[in-house]
Image (cartoon, rainbow, N blue to C red; front, side):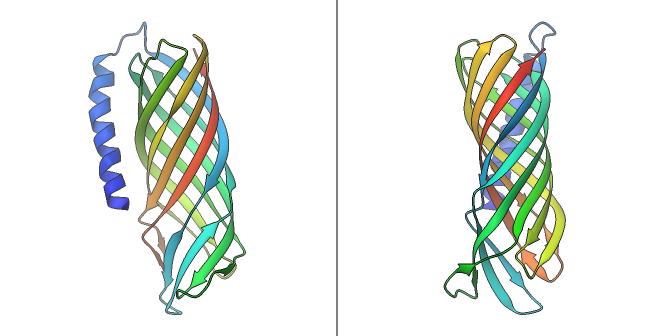
Length: 206
């Protein structure tokens, strides 16, 4: 699953970048700043502790996230650099397939991503979009007995709709899937983690 998402994100980025570059014009490429926040959820992350020979599956409660992004808006889309943070309290954990029990601790992550988005009907009031990006994220895993952090490869897929209130201001309602792979916690082995995020953002165009 993580490999498929990674290939899909790269395909979107490579396909979108030449298209946006080909549309570059100083009159239409506008700098912008986006401030957004919303809710996040991890529906399940699997990891093994080789020192105790135990396997775990952890789920979280709904948490919160925040993001700051800066980029260039073209007629056909956007290229942006973003930094984000997510914090989620743990909900339940299964150990070696046993029934789930309440879990303590939390999962939190910082990310830095370069993304490309296609915008449809960018001159209209309602402008749907989709896209993706790649970068890095630092994920801290704390289940009450394990408290580890590491930096891994991050990718995201996103879709939503822009409410263009004026030529200089838009409201962004969207969904972002953030995946992080290649995390090394020593004795704790994890293939990857997926954060589901629903956001509302305020975009200021200059």
